[in-house]
Length: 426
Length: 158
Image 1 (tube, rainbow over the protein chains, first blue to last red):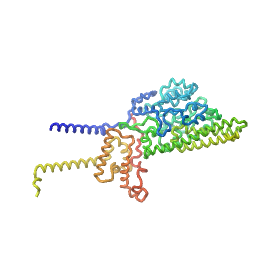
Image 2 (cartoon, each protein chain N blue to C red):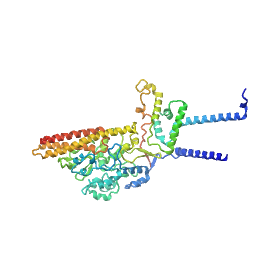
Image 3 (cartoon, rainbow over the protein chains, first blue to last red):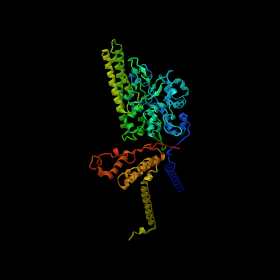
Image 4 (cartoon, rainbow over the protein chains, first blue to last red):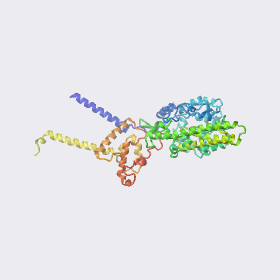
Protein backbone atom coordinates (compact mmCIF):
# COMPACT_ATOMS: atom_id res chain seq x y z
CA UNK A 1 0.00 0.00 0.00
CA UNK A 2 2.82 2.40 0.89
CA UNK A 3 4.74 1.46 -2.28
CA UNK A 4 1.72 2.27 -4.39
CA UNK A 5 1.47 5.68 -2.77
CA UNK A 6 5.15 6.37 -3.43
CA UNK A 7 4.83 5.45 -7.07
CA UNK A 8 1.88 7.78 -7.45
CA UNK A 9 3.83 10.57 -5.80
CA UNK A 10 6.86 9.97 -8.05
CA UNK A 11 4.72 9.98 -11.19
CA UNK A 12 2.99 13.15 -10.04
CA UNK A 13 6.35 14.83 -9.41
CA UNK A 14 7.65 13.83 -12.86
CA UNK A 15 4.53 15.20 -14.53
CA UNK A 16 4.78 18.41 -12.56
CA UNK A 17 8.43 18.79 -13.54
CA UNK A 18 7.64 18.29 -17.24
CA UNK A 19 4.86 20.82 -16.94
CA UNK A 20 7.19 23.32 -15.27
CA UNK A 21 9.84 22.80 -17.96
CA UNK A 22 7.29 23.27 -20.74
CA UNK A 23 5.83 26.39 -19.15
CA UNK A 24 9.29 27.82 -18.52
CA UNK A 25 10.48 27.14 -22.08
CA UNK A 26 7.34 28.45 -23.71
CA UNK A 27 6.44 31.42 -21.54
CA UNK A 28 9.46 32.48 -19.48
CA UNK A 29 12.77 31.74 -21.17
CA UNK A 30 11.78 32.67 -24.71
CA UNK A 31 14.50 32.94 -27.35
CA UNK A 32 15.86 36.46 -27.61
CA UNK A 33 14.58 38.28 -30.67
CA UNK A 34 17.66 40.50 -30.81
CA UNK A 35 21.36 39.88 -31.24
CA UNK A 36 23.64 41.52 -28.72
CA UNK A 37 26.09 43.89 -30.35
CA UNK A 38 29.73 43.08 -29.60
CA UNK A 39 32.63 45.49 -29.60
CA UNK A 40 34.91 44.36 -32.38
CA UNK A 41 37.59 46.84 -33.40
CA UNK A 42 37.76 48.02 -37.03
CA UNK A 43 40.63 46.15 -38.65
CA UNK A 44 39.89 42.85 -36.94
CA UNK A 45 39.55 40.50 -39.89
CA UNK A 46 39.82 37.13 -38.19
CA UNK A 47 36.38 35.52 -38.57
CA UNK A 48 36.99 33.37 -35.48
CA UNK A 49 37.08 36.51 -33.32
CA UNK A 50 33.75 37.69 -34.74
CA UNK A 51 32.50 34.14 -34.36
CA UNK A 52 32.86 34.27 -30.59
CA UNK A 53 30.08 36.86 -30.49
CA UNK A 54 28.02 35.67 -33.44
CA UNK A 55 28.32 31.88 -33.19
CA UNK A 56 25.35 30.90 -35.35
CA UNK A 57 26.50 33.06 -38.25
CA UNK A 58 30.11 31.92 -37.84
CA UNK A 59 29.21 28.26 -37.74
CA UNK A 60 27.33 28.63 -41.01
CA UNK A 61 30.23 30.65 -42.51
CA UNK A 62 32.53 27.72 -41.79
CA UNK A 63 30.33 25.55 -44.00
CA UNK A 64 31.75 27.53 -46.93
CA UNK A 65 34.79 25.28 -46.57
CA UNK A 66 32.72 22.38 -47.79
CA UNK A 67 33.62 21.39 -51.35
CA UNK A 68 30.60 19.84 -53.00
CA UNK A 69 28.75 19.86 -56.30
CA UNK A 70 25.26 21.36 -56.50
CA UNK A 71 22.17 19.18 -56.89
CA UNK A 72 21.68 20.41 -60.47
CA UNK A 73 25.25 19.56 -61.45
CA UNK A 74 26.18 23.12 -62.42
CA UNK A 75 28.41 25.43 -60.41
CA UNK A 76 29.33 24.04 -57.02
CA UNK A 77 32.53 24.49 -55.04
CA UNK A 78 34.65 21.59 -56.25
CA UNK A 79 37.99 22.68 -57.60
CA UNK A 80 38.21 21.16 -61.12
CA UNK A 81 39.40 22.42 -64.50
CA UNK A 82 36.39 23.66 -66.46
CA UNK A 83 38.05 22.68 -69.74
CA UNK A 84 37.49 19.02 -68.87
CA UNK A 85 33.77 19.61 -69.46
CA UNK A 86 34.08 22.42 -72.01
CA UNK A 87 37.20 21.80 -74.12
CA UNK A 88 36.39 24.85 -76.28
CA UNK A 89 37.77 26.91 -73.38
CA UNK A 90 41.29 25.86 -74.41
CA UNK A 91 40.85 27.39 -77.86
CA UNK A 92 38.83 30.43 -76.87
CA UNK A 93 41.25 31.51 -74.12
CA UNK A 94 44.43 30.49 -75.86
CA UNK A 95 47.32 32.85 -75.16
CA UNK A 96 45.96 34.16 -71.87
CA UNK A 97 46.00 32.93 -68.25
CA UNK A 98 42.52 31.39 -68.37
CA UNK A 99 43.76 29.09 -71.14
CA UNK A 100 46.25 27.68 -68.62
CA UNK A 101 44.13 27.47 -65.51
CA UNK A 102 40.36 27.93 -65.37
CA UNK A 103 39.03 26.06 -62.39
CA UNK A 104 35.66 26.17 -60.67
CA UNK A 105 35.71 28.66 -57.79
CA UNK A 106 35.53 27.54 -54.18
CA UNK A 107 33.95 29.22 -51.14
CA UNK A 108 34.95 32.54 -49.58
CA UNK A 109 37.33 31.02 -46.97
CA UNK A 110 39.51 29.75 -49.86
CA UNK A 111 39.73 33.05 -51.74
CA UNK A 112 43.22 33.90 -50.52
CA UNK A 113 44.61 30.39 -50.87
CA UNK A 114 43.20 30.05 -54.38
CA UNK A 115 44.61 33.45 -55.35
CA UNK A 116 48.06 32.33 -54.24
CA UNK A 117 47.84 28.94 -55.90
CA UNK A 118 46.32 29.77 -59.28
CA UNK A 119 48.60 29.58 -62.29
CA UNK A 120 47.05 32.80 -63.56
CA UNK A 121 49.12 34.80 -61.07
CA UNK A 122 52.78 35.67 -61.60
CA UNK A 123 55.44 38.22 -60.60
CA UNK A 124 53.94 40.70 -63.08
CA UNK A 125 50.43 40.52 -61.51
CA UNK A 126 49.27 43.90 -60.20
CA UNK A 127 47.95 44.64 -56.73
CA UNK A 128 44.47 45.06 -58.22
CA UNK A 129 44.17 41.26 -58.26
CA UNK A 130 43.66 41.12 -54.49
CA UNK A 131 40.76 43.61 -54.48
CA UNK A 132 38.07 41.01 -53.99
CA UNK A 133 40.07 38.27 -52.34
CA UNK A 134 40.61 39.61 -48.84
CA UNK A 135 39.25 41.69 -46.01
CA UNK A 136 42.69 43.31 -45.72
CA UNK A 137 41.71 45.37 -48.77
CA UNK A 138 40.12 47.75 -46.27
CA UNK A 139 43.41 48.55 -44.48
CA UNK A 140 45.49 48.57 -47.66
CA UNK A 141 43.07 50.95 -49.39
CA UNK A 142 43.04 53.17 -46.31
CA UNK A 143 46.85 53.46 -46.44
CA UNK A 144 47.51 53.62 -50.15
CA UNK A 145 44.27 54.76 -51.78
CA UNK A 146 43.95 53.84 -55.45
CA UNK A 147 47.75 53.46 -55.54
CA UNK A 148 47.49 49.85 -54.32
CA UNK A 149 46.60 48.68 -57.82
CA UNK A 150 50.06 49.56 -59.15
CA UNK A 151 51.96 47.75 -56.38
CA UNK A 152 53.00 44.23 -57.43
CA UNK A 153 50.66 41.65 -55.94
CA UNK A 154 53.59 39.66 -54.51
CA UNK A 155 54.58 42.72 -52.51
CA UNK A 156 51.10 43.11 -51.05
CA UNK A 157 50.87 39.47 -49.96
CA UNK A 158 52.84 40.37 -46.82
CA UNK A 159 49.91 42.49 -45.65
CA UNK A 160 47.19 40.05 -46.60
CA UNK A 161 46.32 37.71 -43.77
CA UNK A 162 42.72 36.75 -44.28
CA UNK A 163 40.43 35.73 -47.14
CA UNK A 164 36.96 37.23 -47.63
CA UNK A 165 35.61 37.47 -44.10
CA UNK A 166 33.01 39.32 -42.03
CA UNK A 167 34.44 42.83 -42.48
CA UNK A 168 34.03 42.70 -46.27
CA UNK A 169 30.29 43.11 -45.76
CA UNK A 170 29.77 44.21 -42.12
CA UNK A 171 30.64 47.34 -40.19
CA UNK A 172 31.98 45.85 -36.93
CA UNK A 173 30.69 48.76 -34.84
CA UNK A 174 27.04 48.44 -35.86
CA UNK A 175 26.94 45.11 -37.77
CA UNK A 176 25.19 47.06 -40.52
CA UNK A 177 25.93 45.99 -44.06
CA UNK A 178 28.55 48.00 -45.92
CA UNK A 179 30.43 47.85 -49.21
CA UNK A 180 34.19 48.31 -49.27
CA UNK A 181 35.24 47.79 -52.89
CA UNK A 182 36.12 51.26 -54.28
CA UNK A 183 35.30 50.27 -57.90
CA UNK A 184 31.73 49.32 -56.95
CA UNK A 185 31.15 52.51 -54.99
CA UNK A 186 32.45 54.59 -57.93
CA UNK A 187 30.43 52.68 -60.52
CA UNK A 188 27.24 53.16 -58.51
CA UNK A 189 28.05 56.84 -58.04
CA UNK A 190 28.30 57.22 -61.82
CA UNK A 191 24.84 55.70 -62.05
CA UNK A 192 23.63 58.29 -59.54
CA UNK A 193 23.33 55.85 -56.65
CA UNK A 194 24.84 56.70 -53.29
CA UNK A 195 25.52 53.35 -51.62
CA UNK A 196 25.66 55.06 -48.23
CA UNK A 197 21.97 55.88 -48.59
CA UNK A 198 20.95 52.44 -49.84
CA UNK A 199 18.16 50.60 -48.08
CA UNK A 200 18.85 47.45 -46.14
CA UNK A 201 17.19 45.34 -48.84
CA UNK A 202 19.38 46.95 -51.53
CA UNK A 203 22.47 46.36 -49.40
CA UNK A 204 21.60 42.68 -49.26
CA UNK A 205 22.49 42.63 -52.97
CA UNK A 206 25.14 45.35 -53.06
CA UNK A 207 27.45 43.55 -50.64
CA UNK A 208 27.54 40.65 -53.11
CA UNK A 209 27.59 42.86 -56.21
CA UNK A 210 30.69 44.70 -55.00
CA UNK A 211 32.67 41.64 -56.11
CA UNK A 212 30.40 39.41 -58.18
CA UNK A 213 30.58 41.79 -61.12
CA UNK A 214 32.43 42.31 -64.38
CA UNK A 215 35.47 44.64 -64.22
CA UNK A 216 38.62 45.54 -66.11
CA UNK A 217 42.02 46.96 -65.22
CA UNK A 218 41.97 50.51 -66.58
CA UNK A 219 45.30 51.71 -67.99
CA UNK A 220 47.74 53.06 -67.06
CA UNK A 221 47.41 52.21 -63.33
CA UNK A 222 45.52 48.90 -63.68
CA UNK A 223 42.83 50.38 -61.49
CA UNK A 224 39.74 48.17 -61.11
CA UNK A 225 36.81 49.75 -63.00
CA UNK A 226 33.29 48.42 -63.64
CA UNK A 227 32.10 48.93 -67.25
CA UNK A 228 28.60 50.04 -66.31
CA UNK A 229 28.29 53.51 -67.86
CA UNK A 230 25.95 52.35 -70.63
CA UNK A 231 24.11 49.68 -68.68
CA UNK A 232 24.61 46.24 -67.20
CA UNK A 233 23.69 43.90 -70.06
CA UNK A 234 26.18 42.08 -72.31
CA UNK A 235 25.42 44.32 -75.28
CA UNK A 236 25.66 47.48 -73.17
CA UNK A 237 28.98 46.60 -71.59
CA UNK A 238 30.25 45.59 -75.04
CA UNK A 239 29.23 49.01 -76.38
CA UNK A 240 31.17 50.54 -73.49
CA UNK A 241 34.34 48.59 -74.34
CA UNK A 242 33.98 49.43 -78.04
CA UNK A 243 34.74 53.04 -77.15
CA UNK A 244 38.13 51.99 -75.72
CA UNK A 245 37.70 53.55 -72.24
CA UNK A 246 40.94 55.14 -70.95
CA UNK A 247 42.63 53.53 -73.94
CA UNK A 248 41.66 50.03 -72.81
CA UNK A 249 41.41 47.95 -75.95
CA UNK A 250 42.03 44.35 -75.08
CA UNK A 251 42.73 41.85 -72.36
CA UNK A 252 44.93 39.87 -74.73
CA UNK A 253 45.67 39.19 -78.39
CA UNK A 254 44.35 35.82 -79.55
CA UNK A 255 47.31 33.93 -81.05
CA UNK A 256 45.25 31.92 -83.55
CA UNK A 257 42.81 34.48 -84.93
CA UNK A 258 44.74 37.66 -84.12
CA UNK A 259 41.72 39.20 -82.40
CA UNK A 260 42.00 41.80 -79.63
CA UNK A 261 40.01 39.85 -77.08
CA UNK A 262 38.07 40.71 -73.93
CA UNK A 263 37.67 38.44 -70.89
CA UNK A 264 34.44 38.61 -68.91
CA UNK A 265 34.56 37.92 -65.19
CA UNK A 266 31.60 36.67 -63.22
CA UNK A 267 28.87 39.23 -64.07
CA UNK A 268 26.52 37.67 -61.49
CA UNK A 269 25.17 41.00 -60.22
CA UNK A 270 24.60 42.20 -63.79
CA UNK A 271 22.71 39.13 -64.97
CA UNK A 272 20.67 38.95 -61.76
CA UNK A 273 19.63 42.60 -62.18
CA UNK A 274 17.86 41.81 -65.46
CA UNK A 275 15.97 38.84 -64.01
CA UNK A 276 12.51 38.45 -62.59
CA UNK A 277 13.81 37.96 -59.05
CA UNK A 278 15.73 41.24 -59.03
CA UNK A 279 12.76 43.02 -60.50
CA UNK A 280 10.56 41.63 -57.75
CA UNK A 281 13.07 43.05 -55.26
CA UNK A 282 14.42 39.66 -54.24
CA UNK A 283 17.98 40.23 -53.13
CA UNK A 284 21.00 37.92 -53.41
CA UNK A 285 20.86 37.21 -49.69
CA UNK A 286 17.18 36.27 -49.82
CA UNK A 287 18.10 33.09 -51.72
CA UNK A 288 21.79 32.58 -50.98
CA UNK A 289 21.66 33.47 -47.28
CA UNK A 290 18.14 32.53 -46.20
CA UNK A 291 16.88 32.70 -42.65
CA UNK A 292 17.53 29.63 -40.58
CA UNK A 293 16.59 28.86 -37.02
CA UNK A 294 18.51 27.20 -34.24
CA UNK A 295 16.99 26.79 -30.78
CA UNK A 296 14.29 29.22 -31.78
CA UNK A 297 16.78 31.92 -32.68
CA UNK A 298 16.59 33.23 -36.18
CA UNK A 299 19.77 33.98 -38.13
CA UNK A 300 20.75 34.42 -41.74
CA UNK A 301 22.76 31.56 -43.11
CA UNK A 302 26.31 32.64 -43.92
CA UNK A 303 26.88 29.50 -45.93
CA UNK A 304 26.85 31.31 -49.25
CA UNK A 305 26.08 28.53 -51.67
CA UNK A 306 23.65 27.29 -54.27
CA UNK A 307 20.09 27.79 -53.01
CA UNK A 308 19.36 24.36 -54.45
CA UNK A 309 21.09 22.94 -51.39
CA UNK A 310 18.33 24.37 -49.19
CA UNK A 311 15.31 24.80 -51.43
CA UNK A 312 12.87 24.86 -48.53
CA UNK A 313 14.51 27.85 -46.81
CA UNK A 314 15.30 29.67 -50.04
CA UNK A 315 12.63 29.07 -52.66
CA UNK A 316 9.66 27.79 -50.71
CA UNK A 317 9.56 30.97 -48.63
CA UNK A 318 7.78 32.51 -51.61
CA UNK A 319 7.03 29.67 -54.00
CA UNK A 320 4.33 27.28 -52.93
CA UNK A 321 5.26 24.40 -55.21
CA UNK A 322 7.09 21.35 -53.91
CA UNK A 323 10.85 21.06 -53.61
CA UNK A 324 10.86 18.52 -56.43
CA UNK A 325 8.94 20.85 -58.72
CA UNK A 326 11.37 23.70 -58.05
CA UNK A 327 14.36 21.45 -58.66
CA UNK A 328 12.98 20.28 -62.01
CA UNK A 329 12.28 23.86 -63.03
CA UNK A 330 15.82 24.98 -62.26
CA UNK A 331 17.30 21.93 -63.98
CA UNK A 332 15.27 22.66 -67.12
CA UNK A 333 16.48 26.26 -67.24
CA UNK A 334 20.10 25.34 -66.59
CA UNK A 335 20.13 22.44 -69.07
CA UNK A 336 18.74 24.74 -71.77
CA UNK A 337 21.34 27.41 -71.04
CA UNK A 338 24.13 24.82 -70.90
CA UNK A 339 23.21 23.48 -74.33
CA UNK A 340 23.26 26.97 -75.82
CA UNK A 341 26.47 27.85 -73.99
CA UNK A 342 28.24 24.81 -75.47
CA UNK A 343 26.84 25.60 -78.93
CA UNK A 344 28.08 29.18 -78.75
CA UNK A 345 31.46 28.21 -77.24
CA UNK A 346 32.24 25.54 -79.83
CA UNK A 347 31.11 27.74 -82.75
CA UNK A 348 33.38 30.51 -81.48
CA UNK A 349 36.30 28.07 -81.22
CA UNK A 350 35.68 27.13 -84.84
CA UNK A 351 35.53 30.81 -85.81
CA UNK A 352 38.98 31.42 -84.27
CA UNK A 353 40.34 28.52 -86.32
CA UNK A 354 38.72 29.63 -89.57
CA UNK A 355 39.92 33.21 -89.15
CA UNK A 356 43.43 31.92 -88.41
CA UNK A 357 43.41 29.84 -91.60
CA UNK A 358 41.87 32.63 -93.68
CA UNK A 359 44.48 35.12 -92.50
CA UNK A 360 47.22 32.90 -93.96
CA UNK A 361 45.66 32.87 -97.43
CA UNK A 362 47.58 35.21 -99.72
CA UNK A 363 45.56 38.07 -101.14
CA UNK A 364 42.98 37.85 -98.37
CA UNK A 365 40.54 40.76 -98.24
CA UNK A 366 41.77 42.68 -95.15
CA UNK A 367 38.54 44.66 -94.60
CA UNK A 368 36.39 41.53 -94.62
CA UNK A 369 38.87 39.76 -92.33
CA UNK A 370 38.72 42.63 -89.84
CA UNK A 371 34.93 42.35 -89.92
CA UNK A 372 35.26 38.66 -89.08
CA UNK A 373 37.62 39.49 -86.20
CA UNK A 374 35.24 42.09 -84.79
CA UNK A 375 32.38 39.58 -85.02
CA UNK A 376 34.20 36.82 -83.13
CA UNK A 377 35.32 39.32 -80.50
CA UNK A 378 31.71 40.26 -79.95
CA UNK A 379 30.52 36.64 -80.12
CA UNK A 380 33.00 35.60 -77.46
CA UNK A 381 32.09 38.51 -75.21
CA UNK A 382 28.42 37.51 -75.34
CA UNK A 383 29.26 33.83 -74.72
CA UNK A 384 31.72 34.60 -71.93
CA UNK A 385 29.23 36.95 -70.24
CA UNK A 386 27.03 33.93 -69.58
CA UNK A 387 29.75 31.26 -69.33
CA UNK A 388 31.71 33.21 -66.70
CA UNK A 389 28.53 33.93 -64.78
CA UNK A 390 27.87 31.58 -61.89
CA UNK A 391 24.21 30.58 -62.22
CA UNK A 392 24.17 28.76 -65.59
CA UNK A 393 21.61 31.32 -66.68
CA UNK A 394 19.26 30.94 -63.73
CA UNK A 395 19.72 34.51 -62.51
CA UNK A 396 17.96 35.68 -65.68
CA UNK A 397 17.01 32.85 -68.05
CA UNK A 398 15.57 34.95 -70.88
CA UNK A 399 18.50 37.35 -70.89
CA UNK A 400 20.97 34.46 -70.78
CA UNK A 401 19.40 32.64 -73.72
CA UNK A 402 19.06 35.87 -75.69
CA UNK A 403 22.74 36.67 -75.13
CA UNK A 404 23.86 33.18 -76.10
CA UNK A 405 21.56 33.14 -79.15
CA UNK A 406 23.14 36.36 -80.41
CA UNK A 407 26.57 34.91 -79.66
CA UNK A 408 25.93 31.87 -81.88
CA UNK A 409 24.78 34.14 -84.68
CA UNK A 410 27.80 36.46 -84.40
CA UNK A 411 30.12 33.43 -84.45
CA UNK A 412 28.51 32.04 -87.62
CA UNK A 413 28.67 35.49 -89.20
CA UNK A 414 32.36 35.63 -88.27
CA UNK A 415 33.00 32.29 -89.99
CA UNK A 416 31.10 33.43 -93.10
CA UNK A 417 32.99 36.74 -93.21
CA UNK A 418 36.37 35.00 -92.89
CA UNK A 419 35.49 32.61 -95.70
CA UNK A 420 34.37 35.54 -97.85
CA UNK A 421 37.59 37.37 -97.12
CA UNK A 422 39.79 34.45 -98.21
CA UNK A 423 37.35 32.89 -100.70
CA UNK A 424 37.56 29.64 -98.73
CA UNK A 425 34.97 27.14 -97.52
CA UNK A 426 36.12 26.24 -94.01
CA UNK B 1 -41.10 5.18 -5.56
CA UNK B 2 -37.27 5.32 -5.72
CA UNK B 3 -35.48 2.04 -5.64
CA UNK B 4 -34.20 1.66 -2.15
CA UNK B 5 -30.53 1.61 -3.07
CA UNK B 6 -30.75 5.22 -4.27
CA UNK B 7 -31.27 6.49 -0.78
CA UNK B 8 -28.17 4.73 0.49
CA UNK B 9 -25.28 6.98 1.46
CA UNK B 10 -22.69 5.44 -0.84
CA UNK B 11 -24.87 5.90 -3.92
CA UNK B 12 -25.46 9.55 -3.13
CA UNK B 13 -21.74 10.00 -2.60
CA UNK B 14 -20.86 8.45 -5.96
CA UNK B 15 -23.55 10.39 -7.76
CA UNK B 16 -22.52 13.67 -6.15
CA UNK B 17 -18.85 13.21 -6.89
CA UNK B 18 -19.71 12.21 -10.46
CA UNK B 19 -21.67 15.38 -10.93
CA UNK B 20 -18.92 17.50 -9.40
CA UNK B 21 -16.21 15.88 -11.54
CA UNK B 22 -18.45 16.31 -14.57
CA UNK B 23 -18.93 20.00 -13.85
CA UNK B 24 -15.21 20.53 -13.25
CA UNK B 25 -14.30 18.66 -16.43
CA UNK B 26 -16.74 20.60 -18.57
CA UNK B 27 -15.57 23.87 -17.08
CA UNK B 28 -11.92 22.93 -17.66
CA UNK B 29 -12.55 21.70 -21.22
CA UNK B 30 -14.79 24.62 -22.03
CA UNK B 31 -12.42 27.14 -20.54
CA UNK B 32 -9.31 25.69 -22.13
CA UNK B 33 -11.09 25.41 -25.46
CA UNK B 34 -12.21 28.99 -25.18
CA UNK B 35 -8.90 30.36 -23.88
CA UNK B 36 -6.81 28.45 -26.38
CA UNK B 37 -8.98 29.83 -29.15
CA UNK B 38 -7.81 33.27 -28.18
CA UNK B 39 -5.27 34.80 -30.57
CA UNK B 40 -3.26 36.06 -27.61
CA UNK B 41 -2.84 32.51 -26.46
CA UNK B 42 -1.62 31.39 -29.89
CA UNK B 43 0.82 34.25 -30.21
CA UNK B 44 2.31 33.64 -26.79
CA UNK B 45 4.42 30.98 -28.50
CA UNK B 46 7.65 32.44 -29.89
CA UNK B 47 7.19 30.59 -33.16
CA UNK B 48 3.86 32.33 -33.74
CA UNK B 49 5.00 35.91 -33.06
CA UNK B 50 5.56 36.84 -36.66
CA UNK B 51 2.37 35.43 -38.16
CA UNK B 52 0.30 36.86 -35.30
CA UNK B 53 1.84 40.30 -35.82
CA UNK B 54 0.99 40.23 -39.52
CA UNK B 55 -2.54 39.01 -38.86
CA UNK B 56 -3.15 42.00 -36.59
CA UNK B 57 -2.42 44.30 -39.52
CA UNK B 58 -4.68 42.39 -41.89
CA UNK B 59 -8.27 42.85 -42.99
CA UNK B 60 -9.15 39.67 -41.11
CA UNK B 61 -8.01 40.78 -37.69
CA UNK B 62 -11.54 40.57 -36.30
CA UNK B 63 -11.40 36.79 -36.72
CA UNK B 64 -9.37 34.68 -34.31
CA UNK B 65 -6.81 32.11 -35.42
CA UNK B 66 -9.24 29.23 -34.90
CA UNK B 67 -11.84 30.69 -37.23
CA UNK B 68 -9.63 29.78 -40.17
CA UNK B 69 -7.33 27.11 -38.81
CA UNK B 70 -9.79 24.69 -37.20
CA UNK B 71 -11.79 22.34 -39.42
CA UNK B 72 -15.33 23.42 -40.20
CA UNK B 73 -17.00 20.60 -38.27
CA UNK B 74 -18.74 19.71 -34.98
CA UNK B 75 -17.33 20.50 -31.55
CA UNK B 76 -15.89 17.03 -30.96
CA UNK B 77 -14.06 17.05 -34.29
CA UNK B 78 -12.63 20.47 -33.63
CA UNK B 79 -11.65 19.54 -30.11
CA UNK B 80 -9.84 16.41 -31.28
CA UNK B 81 -8.02 18.27 -34.08
CA UNK B 82 -7.04 21.04 -31.73
CA UNK B 83 -5.71 18.68 -29.11
CA UNK B 84 -3.52 16.88 -31.64
CA UNK B 85 -2.28 20.14 -33.17
CA UNK B 86 -1.67 21.59 -29.72
CA UNK B 87 0.44 18.64 -28.59
CA UNK B 88 2.49 18.90 -31.78
CA UNK B 89 2.97 22.65 -31.34
CA UNK B 90 3.88 22.33 -27.69
CA UNK B 91 6.42 19.64 -28.50
CA UNK B 92 8.21 21.72 -31.11
CA UNK B 93 7.92 24.95 -29.15
CA UNK B 94 9.49 23.32 -26.10
CA UNK B 95 12.30 21.70 -28.09
CA UNK B 96 12.53 24.75 -30.36
CA UNK B 97 12.72 22.66 -33.48
CA UNK B 98 10.42 24.81 -35.59
CA UNK B 99 11.81 26.19 -38.88
CA UNK B 100 12.54 29.81 -39.75
CA UNK B 101 9.55 29.92 -42.02
CA UNK B 102 6.49 27.98 -40.94
CA UNK B 103 4.37 26.79 -43.85
CA UNK B 104 0.80 25.54 -43.90
CA UNK B 105 0.58 21.75 -44.26
CA UNK B 106 -1.49 20.19 -47.05
CA UNK B 107 -4.16 19.28 -44.52
CA UNK B 108 -4.00 22.79 -43.07
CA UNK B 109 -4.59 24.23 -46.53
CA UNK B 110 -7.74 22.15 -47.00
CA UNK B 111 -9.03 23.38 -43.64
CA UNK B 112 -8.31 27.02 -44.43
CA UNK B 113 -10.01 26.65 -47.80
CA UNK B 114 -13.15 25.30 -46.15
CA UNK B 115 -13.16 28.30 -43.88
CA UNK B 116 -12.66 30.80 -46.69
CA UNK B 117 -15.81 29.39 -48.25
CA UNK B 118 -17.78 29.62 -45.03
CA UNK B 119 -17.93 33.35 -45.69
CA UNK B 120 -17.01 33.76 -49.32
CA UNK B 121 -18.92 30.89 -50.96
CA UNK B 122 -21.52 33.19 -52.45
CA UNK B 123 -18.82 35.34 -54.04
CA UNK B 124 -17.41 32.46 -56.02
CA UNK B 125 -20.37 30.15 -56.50
CA UNK B 126 -21.06 31.21 -60.08
CA UNK B 127 -17.44 31.19 -61.12
CA UNK B 128 -14.97 28.49 -62.05
CA UNK B 129 -13.62 28.94 -58.54
CA UNK B 130 -16.79 27.54 -57.00
CA UNK B 131 -16.26 25.25 -53.99
CA UNK B 132 -13.97 22.43 -55.00
CA UNK B 133 -12.83 24.34 -58.06
CA UNK B 134 -9.64 25.87 -56.79
CA UNK B 135 -7.31 26.38 -53.89
CA UNK B 136 -7.99 29.94 -52.65
CA UNK B 137 -4.45 30.13 -51.31
CA UNK B 138 -2.91 29.78 -54.76
CA UNK B 139 -3.60 33.46 -55.23
CA UNK B 140 -4.68 34.85 -51.88
CA UNK B 141 -2.13 33.37 -49.52
CA UNK B 142 -0.62 36.73 -48.55
CA UNK B 143 -3.93 38.29 -47.48
CA UNK B 144 -3.76 37.56 -43.79
CA UNK B 145 -0.14 36.91 -42.88
CA UNK B 146 1.53 39.01 -45.55
CA UNK B 147 4.73 37.52 -46.78
CA UNK B 148 5.68 37.00 -43.16
CA UNK B 149 9.06 38.52 -43.81
CA UNK B 150 10.79 40.19 -40.94
CA UNK B 151 10.63 43.91 -41.45
CA UNK B 152 14.20 45.10 -41.16
CA UNK B 153 15.54 41.61 -40.57
CA UNK B 154 17.26 40.46 -37.44
CA UNK B 155 17.50 43.19 -34.85
CA UNK B 156 20.77 44.09 -33.23
CA UNK B 157 20.60 45.28 -29.65
CA UNK B 158 22.37 48.59 -29.25
